[in-house]
Amino acid sequence: MNNALDMIEAKVLSGQRLTREDGIALYDSNDLARIGYLADTVRRRISGDYVYYDVNLHINLTNVCIGQCKFCAFGCKATSDRAYSLTKQSVLDRIAKAASDPDMKNLHIVSGLHPDWPYEYYLDIIKTIKHTFPDMHLKGFTGVEIMHFVKISGKSIREVLSELMEAGLETMPGGGAEILDDDLRKKLCPNKATSAEWLEVARTAHKLGMKTNASMLYGHIETVEQRIDHLLTLRNLQDETGGLQTFICFPFEPKNTQLESCITRTSVWDDLKTMAISRLMLDNVHNIKAYWVMLTLPIAMLALGFGANDIDGTVGGEKIMHAAGVSSQKSLTKNSLIAAIKEAGRIPAECDCNFNVVRTF
Ligand code: SF4
Image 1 (tube, rainbow, N blue to C red):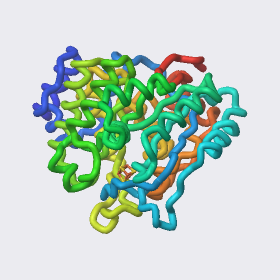
Image 2: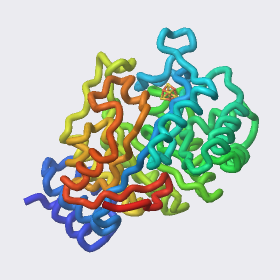
Image 3: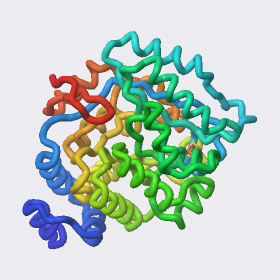
């Protein structure tokens, strides 16, 4: 008998909102099966039996970055042997090659904070991609990148977002949120957007009519309380704007980062519990993503029973997580994603980056 879990179950089954104390009690419990059952119940109620995926290409324009975040294996200095920066033509060539698959309609563009590229470069590349490939859906630039553009352009968040939207940007990914706690951010990533700045970018995007995602990077130096507070901060934002499409929890991959020697990767147990608790706490966000690139496909399939209803996409060209040595494949075929979703007993729903369903299987 677990009184705290009994009370939480009663709340979940009657549709009541969970509190901070409930979230912490869920982390304190070792009854993973029961937490998973509760999350799956909420998943069915909120988003039904469809599991969303897209056929997509990741484009990381450069890994040169002024960030130097302790948890990052991707960003580096311009002088590093690993440094690269794509030319506009090579970006177009990559898209053209991927677009030979007629189902490939979604681009995911995130990059390092390049010390020398002007804001106009980013605007131009979005305009050029949209002009050359008008049918492509463009998801791009985290809240951290948008704040970088604000700083290098001298424009406001609203001006930057409006100009990018006019150029063809349709939605934003959820990266850069990490844990929205400034004490933690000062220790881990002091050179990038503060919590308030990240939130203001998302809020402004929502007011301008652009949907965004949100994420949580967990399993480094944060506490369970900071994880729950992060989820509650996002829940409050969603109550205010309704503009969050999807929440993604990223387990921290220590390999090749500044924290490699002192932190070990989270357990599958923690990953599934965090997935389930995210579903339970974020009662106002429609989609919870099991990002197979970080979880591996078998664990992502399992996560579909722990509250997730989105498995990301075919993910051609991903570099950021693979820089940290994740063991998953570089990309998956559409058929293997469909098979994985069906094997998990759910209905595959192919969508664009705004969750418009293209077809179901
Ligand atoms: S997390 Fe982003 S901002 Fe930080 S170093 Fe890596 S690429 Fe740069």
